[in-house]
Length: 80
Length: 260
Image: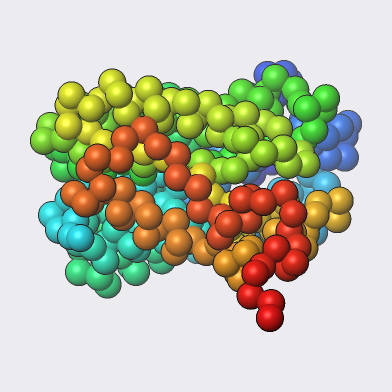
């Protein structure tokens, strides 16, 4: 069974932030110590992984990591 | 001025100034390799516009700030075309911070994409320019003027301009012509990222003595000229395109002499 989007995003974030990440303990990527460059790199890696395009304007409406994951799932569904 | 049969790589060639350059070189007859980083759909749209001019378009996704990705890009170019005639170093990024707020990552990110990428691309491109060629770097007036929160980009562009001069001399014996273009504020999507800041002197950027802002097409026209035979004795220059905006410290209509 393929990894869930949440698991995959967690792996990507861990690799880019060079540490274990626990989404349950935080609200957003900044809480994990991510700066704007980290977030861009996470986005690019997610886009490459799922072959989707995340739209900056749509992203601005996302409040937290839960929204971010739901947004990715929506983009993956749209592609199908 | 024809570039018929030439093969051109435009880094960051899908949007803004890069898109205008891709289209202009295509309209002069060159096949275009469009490098892009994020938006494939935008790159595909530009590729279609390029093809509509009767030349080939080829897309390569790569972050030119990453040496491995530059390597991969040139491996693809070598396999697909076997040579290169024109390199336009246009891709740019940057962290918009004041000097005292800049950290090493923001500095490195900006320097790597804006300045180091030209070094890496030029090294690879020079080997593929077996019959000579042309390189043009796209700089910015931020290399010599101080603009708010433009520190990292401005410094990276200064490095890019110095590199342009060094390459121009080092590559001249290989029949490779290298020049740069420093533009004033150009009307693109990227500019909106800066002008969104209310602290910036917006009105000053929106006009020039020439009566309008610089457009991407203005840059593209100069790139085409700098890649043409007609410009062959121009070497290592950074040519300013700003509609005269930085000529005078006084931006007053009183300077004009057309008053009766």
